[in-house]
Length: 328
Image 1: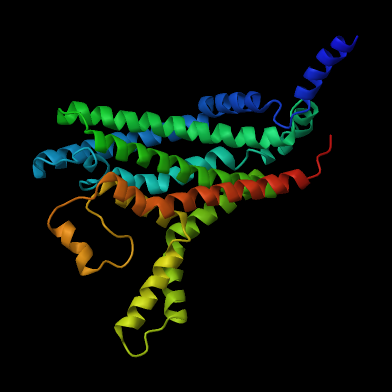
Image 2: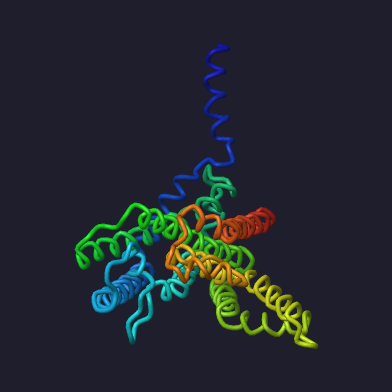
């Protein structure tokens, strides 16, 4: 009898875990994302932009660049009129894809009146919210990894040589940074999806935030810096103080953090993210690129800040979701 009671208690303890049903939610949501018409349209858009930008970059590399130790990195950064570089597309496309995956993750269940049915199953709120976020995050990782491999494959075929070890390492870190950049916008879209019951409102709020950081924040940063640190006499100290404040304020934008990460990883000659002193220009002028370890140290604050803000947004969405009243 005691042994039987102990065996019966084990499944009950497992059923009581707050993460019961997590991977069921992840797999179901990933299947929905990857088979949805919305995702197929976005995948085709990314594929066309990637192929067009990389093909134009290869034409430019063949005609203008000779032997280069970081030739593969130029596939992502070299542009040819009228197409910009591929990383220029990423700054705009990654937020749009992440927002499309997350703006109706929670309120869509309310509008379809399926939230109470979901939570009536052995699935806790913790597992539901975490599962939806992980499903969107893994979908982003899968899509960006496929595009990343496609570009490298096109480069091997088009340029006729494989990438070097340091190039692969830089591109891997670039891929991780891109995925977490998308994770930030996914967490933001899910936060609005929890906050607003209408999917259209959540999508509009997410797009408005993206537009604010993309277009308007750089304008406001200059005005705020001029107001708080005005240049009255024109001394170098005043100019430096205003510039440092402007740089610090601009880094409150995830777009700026991601752009600085791209610059340091894909341009090994870059030695500073802020004010550049003459001694820092010396190595770049002589053509000596930074080693990978130094480039990683240069972007470490930006990368950790991007990850930390993503976690903070998800935690805020978690708290709001736990406080919501769900009725049958």
